[in-house]
Image (cartoon, rainbow, N blue to C red):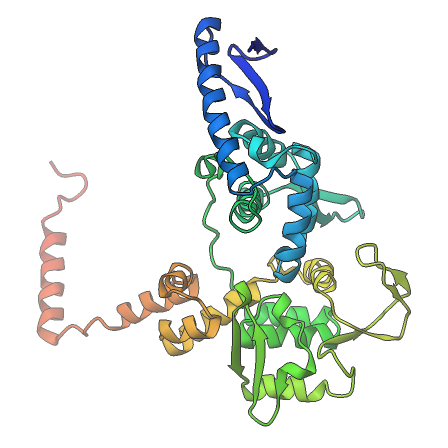
Length: 396
């Protein structure tokens, strides 16, 4: 039984194994005597935990195995393919051979801090130089504490993995600034029409009409029912939905028939190239299905060229804002965007835009009643009295 100190920490540390389960961490004690007492208590708890885990058939698991299994069972079937790269980053940062039950608050804190120092591409400047920006708190939260919690919860609940105690996840989440709802204006739509290809312009218009997320836009013809004027999608969280098509949305899809037997939205390659993310070889002049990453690439290149600073998800916000402005019906907007709770809808779409605010102020101004002839006469008389009461210049 031993405790030890490490550099850059005033506290004694402990590290021991029981039947293949490793337990280590800080004692939070500066006295060696108290640190040894703390370690003895940890050993007793660890013995009880290991016995309980073995009796229940539970076993240890490394982070690498857990991350790969979580991706196969959950992640690849979701709507965010970037989580696979986030898992690879976590395995490198924390360690692929680290056992799940040994992951503690200190490891998560260090991972969060390291993630905050990462950057992502943010387009190019006028000279073509690659620009970068730091990850947002929301991205850090999604790819470190939230993702690790999802992996460890599934390991404990679905795979019978022995985990004594998980980190206190709540304290590792960074505060997120509420992003104002960004609506794409009609003038911006016209500017985008000038720079985007017809295929991508129709995709954007369809997204603004239907309020679909990026992955939901990757429609196949089996999801389209022209007889009923509907589309069937699998939304966020794997929830299926059948959505009605407006006449314009119907016309967009009708015009795309014959381009591809399977995929609805396609594009014609403007140049021959090899996609670095998917390994697909594109040949100039040939038609290909639009992809998740391809839609994002078009947005980064074309929208910047049009001077439109917006995200793809803002097409969905545009749907909500326009629908609320046209109908005033928040419940309808909730159903259109498929929010589970009305408070989610209200948190985004009850804020007025500058145009709405100005229009409301103008209506208030216009609602003021006209002054009567008597009121005008009294005001004029009062003004004359105030003027005559003022002392003239040059007289005491």
